[in-house]
Image 1: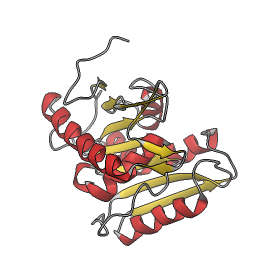
Image 2: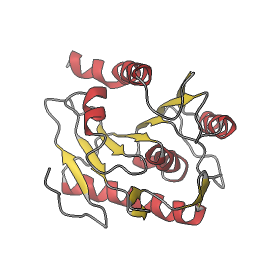
Image 3: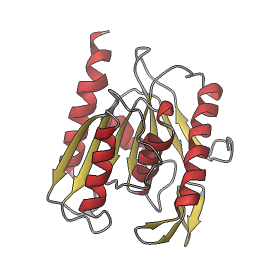
Length: 219
């Protein structure tokens, strides 16, 4: 695939919507470490066929692998850098909405691993950017100064009991903060490792369908 020009520092890919209603969300696709702007396009299409997809490439390079923020060691995040890049990502979404004419449409983050962690950081620091989130293998990325207002925001968290990268207590802390903020949180635990499974996809697609696909089909 050819690359699109960078926008406020992000190389990205944008797929326009096909035959959707005004409430059909734009999917913000956020790849894991070592991925790029093309990695999650098939995942987005599987979750919500026909939805617009906005897929940026992480702006940090670690040993040749793209990431969305720096870390000091595996599982130890550079929180100052994470905060700066979370706000930068939120500003990118706003700029992309202007550039691709989806201002006012709901934006739903779909992230895996490192991408899910910065999506969680968006929920905690810039929740007004999002209308929902699907978090595959996320943990609490930082402790916010205050609990965000997430009243009614739908969030799906796919977690694994044997995830070698996401400690159960850090996943549960993220879930507790989201609930404290009022998010309509669904947590799906399964006996798996960090890699995604067919069951993850099935559960997430079913959840997304209840939230948005049925509305499109009834239009």
